[in-house]
Length: 164
Ligand code: CUA
Image (cartoon, rainbow, N blue to C red; front, side):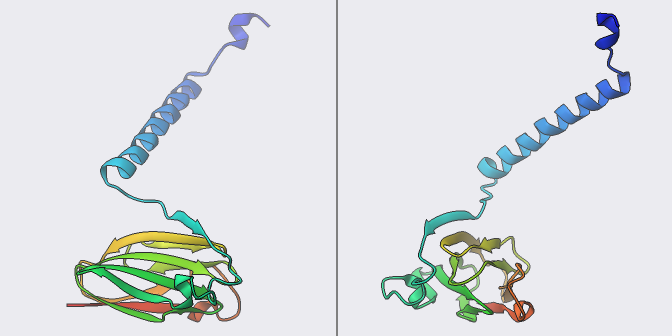
């Protein structure tokens, strides 16, 4: 086989190589725009905790899960996931509020998705998942478990009530 033959690339193959390179460049540009221009965050592993004591240690914010008001319209919500409930089951904020969710699990892996929003995190025992969201529209937003976690997984949910 001559060198020329072994180097032969079919024109279609060459075209598709070109297409895949262009797609890669577009995808990388999209990640850059999403991250830097639009400020879209990936749920970050905020801190590590001990899942055996996270609910009982009085120094742990998840020993009293719930909403804390930092300033007018600015809240933190400490949510504890366990089989098969979120604590608290309900939080209420005024419309326009920004809430930073800190969610962790005291037992197995759960999910935390707030319906009709972009909030969707995996909740891994020992790790804290954090995400901000601003509620611009009044209504009820259920947060549901999205990781199969046992028999009553399907009824594991809570509600954010956004008041007008
Ligand atoms: Cu918790 Cu499914």
